[in-house]
Image (cartoon, rainbow, N blue to C red; front, side, top):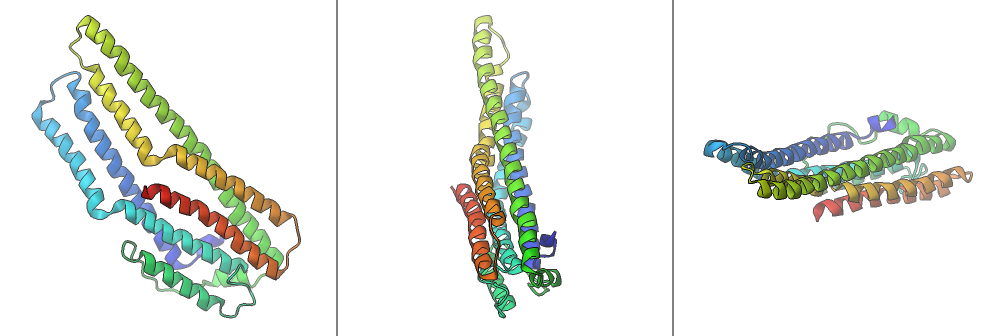
Length: 281
C-alpha cells in the first residue's frame, strides 16, 4: 500500500490520533463502570461507604483526566491533521490538482501544504518530522504512466475507502441497535421488577441497578454516536461508489484527471468534516 510510504507527518499524526482515541474511550468506560458499580452492589448488599467513595473517586479522576489532557481534542485534531495530510498526499501521488504531473513545483507545494496543516494542529498535536515530505515511493508512483496511476487510485484509494466506509457503517448500525435494545431491556427490567418488588415487598433494589445500567447504555451510545456515524459512513460509501463508476466510464488525459482527483478528494473530505462537526457538538 502506497499509504504506508506517505509523509512522516501523516504517519505520526495518525498514530497520535489513535493513541488519544484509545485514552479517551477508556476513560469514558472507566467512568461509566465506576458509576454503575455502587448501584449494582447496593441492590444486593451494603457495600459500605469506603467502596462507594472509591468508585466515585475513580469516576471523578477519569473525568478530570479527560479535561486535563484534552484527550478528545487531541484525538480529533490528530485525525484532522492525518486526514488532511492523506488527502494532499494522494493528490500529489496520482497527479491531482494542484499537484498535476506537469507542475514542477509539486514537491515544494506539498511541503508548503503539510507545513500549513502542521501549524493548524500544532497546539494539540505537536509533530516533528525528519524526512522530506515526498518519499521515494511517492515520487516513483508519481512518475508512472497515467493508466497505472488511475488503477492505483481506483484500487488503493476509492475502493479501499469505500470498503472501509461500508464495513464501518454496518458495524456502527449493528452496535447502535444492540446498545439500544440493551437500554430498552434494562428499562423494562427495572419497570417489571419494580412492580413485582413493590407487590411482594422485596428487599432487593433491582430498580436501582437496572436504571443505572440503562443510563450507562444511553451514555455510551451518546459517546460512540453509532447511528450518526452509521448513516454518515453509508452516505460516504455510496458517494464513492459513484466516483468509482466515473473512473471506469471514460478514458483519461492528464488535465481532466487532475481536476477529477481534486473533486474526488473533496468528496472524501466532506465526510471527515461532518465527523468533526458531530464530535464538536
